[in-house]
Length: 225
Length: 225
DNA sequence: GTACTAATTAACTATCTAGTGAGTTATGTC
DNA sequence: GACATAACTCACTAGATAGTTAATTAGTAC
Image 1: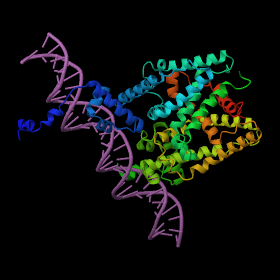
Image 2 (image 1 turned 90 degrees about the vertical axis):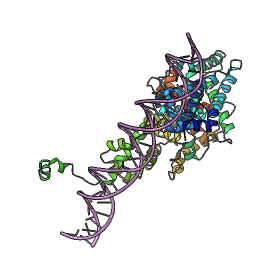
Image 3 (image 1 turned 180 degrees about the vertical axis):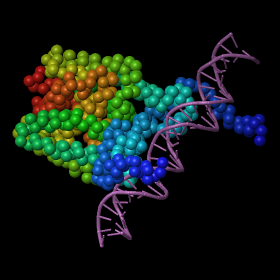
Image 4 (image 1 turned 180 degrees about the horizontal axis):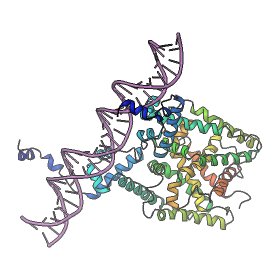
């Protein structure tokens, strides 16, 4: 069997002929890697397995991302970028302070529930002590808008004399985040210990309302406002 | 150099002669493994490295724990046992309901801060979707006392008409846990994003007081009690 | 002191895994 | 249409890694 025979006998080769598309290839790798890293962790994910799930070859992962850590860092940065974009959509400045706080809490609640892979990547990166995240440029600035939004609400509430003044936007952000992150991140051990599914549909309405109640009760605590 | 010469020339061989101590060997392996797994995760930890840090050999890990997963499960169970023992020490039934809640919140706060390795193991096991923890026998029972304690406090407060009644011990436990766990577990990414050290000494008093305030404000929210 | 077994040691291996070497092809440029 | 180069393919490798084989020794029971 000669080379020309093979080529001539396989017209489908033309249909699947090599076409170039760097953006698509890079994006394809990144998406697959994000799923794999979120699923198995940095040390648990396998380059060969990631490669097998892409439309390209392993060599391309190294071509575009250098090494496993480089790919992981690219995944982390992309994950934070996507979250930032989604969060920039929220607009609560037209609401009364109390209702704005509740809306923010519930948005965070919904958001974290909708992005369990992001929560997993964050947990994985904390297990890794954040060494890869600190290398990402300009991350603090991406989070600043969310804090400023919260700060404006607090300020309005404090000016109106209905919110306590001995707290900050970071305090409240941390309080809301901890609740919403824990519910998604720790659901497995919580279920194992207490046989209670934090992400179960039957518990959702109650847990969703509760975080708003908690934050508002704290901000409007008698004797503090 | 003959064999007898070597033996005769090394009297210290007698000092380090093999002595048997199964409990000590097992315990030694378990402690080293706990540190390593908490540090690097299940997939990140290396059996050879764990073995090298023990006073025994790799073969002994397999002798006592079967395989890597078996060792990891033993570590998890031991970690929860230790935590349970510490938590069983707390006694808040003599305090007024509000003060009992505050004491419980601050105990949890201090406890999690004092056991970052435990928090790490929990995060790792959640990354692992809890598959190893569910195999641990009798875990729910070990957590029951803590929930019952909290339930008694709530009941007393509700009977006295000072606590809201539309919440449960599990709700409050989850609220306190999420705050205290997040502070330790997510400090790295939080620091990277907001340049604020959740476990820094300068923030500790404020954050420690805040969780008690939050829970009490919620439990005593006007219009709900 | 002999026999037995649990505890321990040392050397070994199959497989996995991240990473590469070296060449090939598509595509834009002149 | 020759040239340059970015994008891509394929086969390969060094070293790491979990797990094993098999022999040896310290206690223990009789």
